[in-house]
Image (cartoon, rainbow, N blue to C red):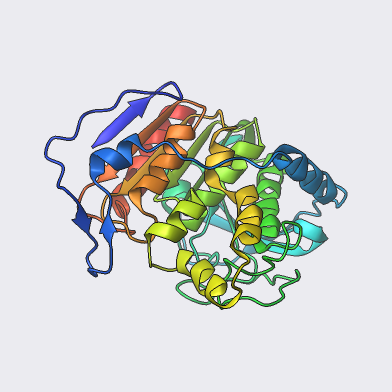
Length: 347
């Protein structure tokens, strides 16, 4: 089911046969009623210094030249050119990416900047060809410190860590300045600057896209920039974070719970940091047309947390529900739906 909205407060198609509740495929928890998830308005309170914190963060990053470096990659692909991209991200440290374009294209092309899900990296040069094959320039950013779980990465994370649960949700959690996602979201914003600097890219037609963690990053960038043509965030992670830590026992959110089991009494301090990185706060500031998706059996990113971001989103928006899917969302159908959405928005 797809639900469209053009205003922050919007009407929705009533549920046709909502169950009293849904149990996730693993049976580990209950997902709230579908109608309640759709109606959910997040209680997330933006920190008073949210805008100043991010303005200072991006100003600090801007002191470093982008230092974009491109190197052609030899592949056996007949219809797609690939370049290995390196640029200066947070703290001026190197971040890697792939630039894929239709073979021989000179531009200016509509462009998709993609972000990767939790634990993954940019993968191989020959992967994720759908956007270049459809006529877009495609910049796929690597994820600092990740890229060793389900797809490979090539970017190190040089930031402070401190005591943390294995994973990334509590890395540097002692302060907002040292928190891992401050560095990663800064990289993501800078990746759009990289795209805008490329001759093959039409700077008026740049979209950001991602699923799960990548969807959360897309929402963060949408809330921090006003020059995007479109946003696609499917089954987005990192939205309504405090709520998620209380209603799901699935990882990665449960990393926060595990951390607080040991660091008793630090709950408010931890959530005070996390509130600076919540997709609900970014959605309240985002204006580019957006496509969301949600798996109604998703234990990793519970449906109400996705709707928390969707209902807060300030721009034109639509959401696609996958009734019988968990965190896999729509799979290839999400990819194809995003492609169609971007074609409508950017040609």
